[in-house]
Image (tube, rainbow, N blue to C red):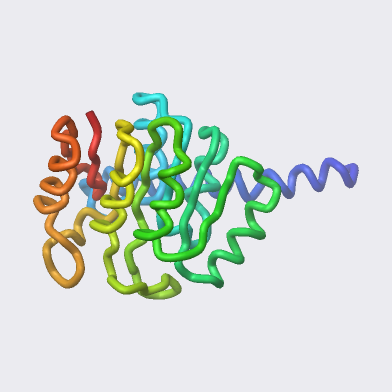
Length: 208
């Protein structure tokens, strides 16, 4: 076996195995009645579904973490912005996406940084809000859940019909810093009454 062929095989094997794992996790999730939280592939597909339906070219994410969502979506969007509070995770993401010219990384509090991003947008974007505190290696800001501030930031820009997806719907019960879903709906509807709310597969979805 030639060395160049061996290198090619080694590069392909991890991706192939990961794809098989995703398919297995998805089948198990369906078999078990679609419990929350769903596997990551479900979240990835939700973003792609809305991108295709509404023709979004720009993805804006809060909560970069290890960069897995950006990695999964970077081929499908013209530009991707991701905000991370943790300086350490931000530096890791910079290394991971060093060669991706369409990926723009931001470090800081998402409720504040989003205002700097939306002012630069010249078209509707798809927002994936996943910057709330989740323990482990995630960073804790002023609040465990900055989603209300993130929504205010989104609507502080030009009046575009953005698509807004919020991860971890199960956590929005009104406890701690997490508002109830009804409160989020009221906030969004006050900004634009045309938005329709759908909660599915642990994702809060605001679209038209």
